[in-house]
Length: 108
Image 1 (cartoon, one colour):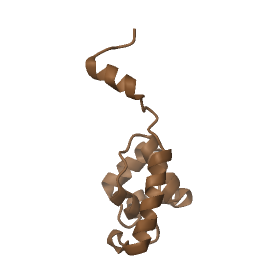
Image 2 (cartoon, rainbow, N blue to C red):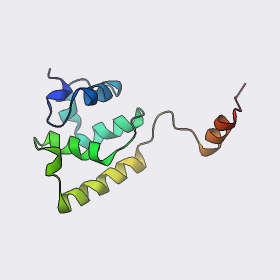
Image 3 (spheres, rainbow, N blue to C red):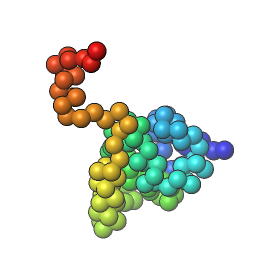
Image 4 (cartoon, one colour):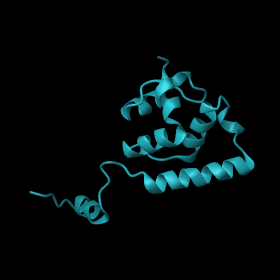
């Protein structure tokens, strides 16, 4: 099995992030595809970032990250926004819980 960092545009830091999401090889990542893998990253707490998403898409196509431009980039932005809207971190808390945590109210 190949490491995630063998995919173009992905380095050791990306490898760590994917490992935290349970994706441990380039083969596994390719099989999942960019959208499913990125959704899993978001669900496991990685903060969504558009450049990271399209760098992944380009890398899985064997292309440099900065090759994404024009209409293709606009289409990827729509896919990214949809992923963000439907993929929530597993530990996501409601707005009221966040406020209560900020002021120090703790459940007993």
